[in-house]
Length: 268
Image (cartoon, rainbow, N blue to C red; front, side, top):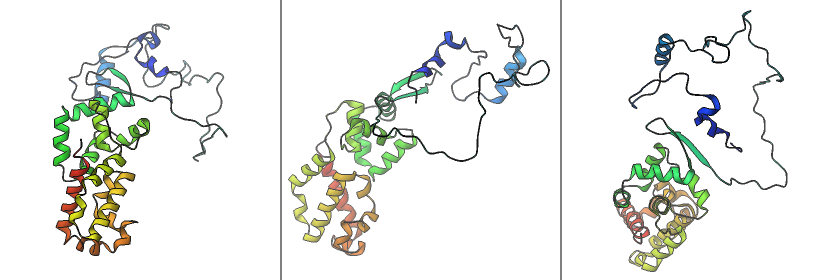
């Protein structure tokens, strides 16, 4: 946690001078130990204040000992994890969060969590149409979410900042393309208004309504997996096999879930 923005100094030459070593790279790989060894062999690095060569193997005194620690205490490591200390009676919240990373040209970039996520999303999906095409064609929406997480796009963190019960879909469209979002509850209510559940038998309708409630509470991830049939309140309608049979078999059940997802995102 950087309360005083001191990490900005790492990119300020007036703080600690220009880099002591410069290595031109093509952007496809980082600096290796071999690169450092070659640079050390090419040129001695001299301390401007002392006029002495900098020893990267350790700054020893002339007598071979390490410098004494001035006004420092003993470093204690007992191997145990210590509990965090909290201030009693005081509510603590994050006012702002920034992310620092190196871009393709090696420059230090500082952005808010929202800006960082938008930048990453626009690299992943060039246009809104591109995103919509991938989202609608995905066998499971969770596969897209997992792919984003692999690419360091963690949308759950951003949901806390937005402070709304938004679907992952709406969060992406809102952050990346400034689209007006709907809450999960609003999307669920829009599905019910279409009344397409009426074509199913009563037991199947009850299951779909319960799954829609679960979507409104928790999101799309949990209703795509068959294991949801074992979870309350879905399991109150019978065993997973009995529930699937009420749809006329597994294929029909999965088809019903896909159709419900289509209606959930139809108003987008």
